[in-house]
Length: 411
Ligand SMILES: [Zn+2]
Image (tube, rainbow, N blue to C red; front, side):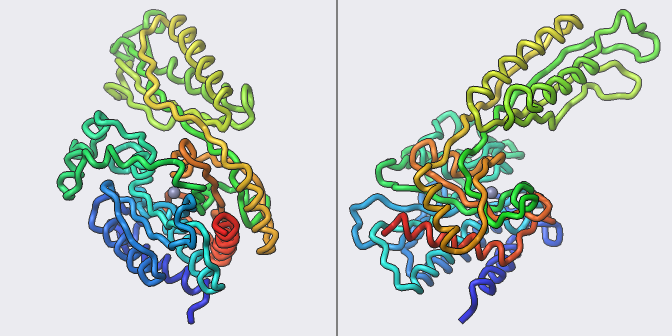
């Protein structure tokens, strides 16, 4: 019989083969052949454990281990199989095969759950194809409206609705798949940290208490396109120095000023026309603000908007400031945080209660049902890159903690 460590390595190697970019990291995009192959592999694994397999209309996969009292609310565990462009071998999959192995541990111990335990594989957690993340969990929590099916498009301008139809799926049915929250006792997701907190503090397990959520802002600053040589400084309407001031403002406002946990990023900038000898006509930039504290995040956005007005008015520049998305941060279920702490003691590993800066399906699920997360360390804090790495022994510890927690939740 294979050891847990051998099984973990076999899953990682097998799943990493399903990539559109062999030798350049794992690229696995929703509704592609590689994504389907990875799902088929997991289906087979779940069948071997005797789980009852179901798939919903958007493509979420469920494996049910029946409990002895099926009227009780279900205990859900899982994560996602899709990967961003040139991503790593660990993001998402650790929580999927980790849930499978946690169930195997409990089965080998002859544990009989009272509650159904459901292994869920969410579809399209990464925003790679449609520019919006967590499609599967959004469908389950009723957060997809009819207009979204038309407006979410991939790089070939094909809408989610069309892609669903191409794949023989019924878009209308996707909209009606919202689950009844009372049917779920708790959702718990094992995941790689994707940061360096655990490694730095030499802790084996992260117990997430808060998940930060992003607010995405688009700022377009309009200037006056003119010659870089013959236009005196005094008469210029140059949007570039204004953009520089805004970028510094984002850093100032999020760097421990209003909130200790806020982060701010200007990750994309489009300069038009973008020539070395031309004063730009327009600069468009994205601003990503995240915090675990919803009120403080709101204060940062308000302050940001006010100070941007001052900066751009002083420079006599017109602009558009639009909030593209505004997700609310979430608190994890406190009782289950205590369960996970206890589980860490039982397994004999160190743990740290911490916030998650990245969002996950657990953030979406937590809007409707109690949800929790267990983190395992990421080497050098690297993720969404081919160099993403977590040691087998660290994953094994995470799986054991998950197994002990599932036991507590389902007995
Ligand atoms: Zn992930």
